[in-house]
Length: 381
Ligand SMILES: *Cc1c(COP(=O)(O)O)cnc(C)c1O
Image 1 (cartoon, helix red, strand yellow):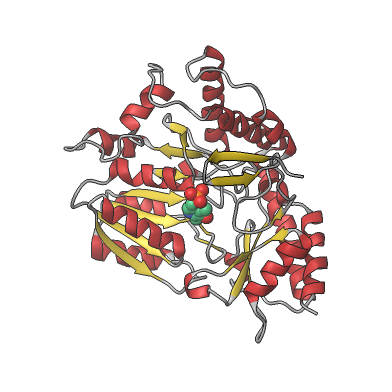
Image 2 (cartoon, rainbow, N blue to C red):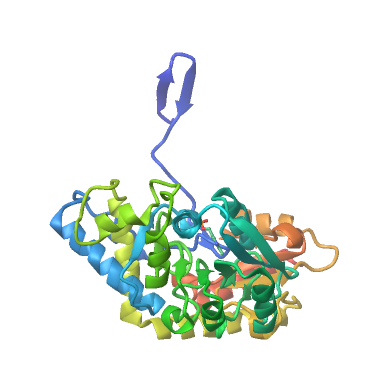
């Protein structure tokens, strides 16, 4: 018998203590958290201004600079998911009427368009079919036409599995006196990134994909050039919670109260980043590449085809074409119900056409591939 708990006179719920299934999360995110990360999260919280917590925040900052390969002083975790950190980049540097050029070749490019418009940007887009990427020449031509203040690109388009090359884009932006903003949500930790070498001015990520942590504490960084634009604003940042002039005082030397940090999530993020540093970020990139190649071989060996041209495929997220005549959604739900494996369905232009298979962070292991392939063989029969 489950205990009956009365919430009010008209409503009774049968509530047993929380019990959730153990899933293998091989979709576009979240991915499974590392057991040591969950353990760290289970530590008794201290206060958000406790000296030990402030020291932990400093460690998070140093570790984030390392995994992103940047020296930006303002490198922090935003309290919220990747979307909050995404919003923070635009909210801080966009002023009404600023030209923002956005590369759209998937779902998250469109989200940037919507967000930038809400902050009053004069939004222009360059577009490609979902699964393709922009060449430097295409970007150069669009820059010459639109002369934006900010160019925004998605490094790892989770909706398509394509990796946008970023070499040379930073120099191009400097020629035009423009800031470069990059979404690294599905690349941080799993795909080589060199923020400073590439001249990226604003970047954001999340905790629950390549970092192998639960969602809720999201990396954010801005360069000195981006900081200058923020400091020269003629109007206040339109989002109080994400205003880096205020948040920077909590993360910087002043340490003044801004909001109550989600203490335990920061514990988790710190442990996830520590594990990544212990492995070595280059080793993690190589592990993701090795395991995804193993996945590709196995998928092809059971007769499936991949959506993105090989040289632009992400090591963290693979789009697999749903075979002609098969119901992709039904197969994905069978994998979940019968095998406890989650994969993603297609979005937007790719709805019904692909599955999205993630091998991110802790889940980027040969055993994940073996489990998925064994299940796929059964359900595709
Ligand atoms: C997941 C994702 C986001 C949004 O992050 P949330 O943590 O879901 O808010 C943004 N951009 C890309 C490319 C993503 O994959």
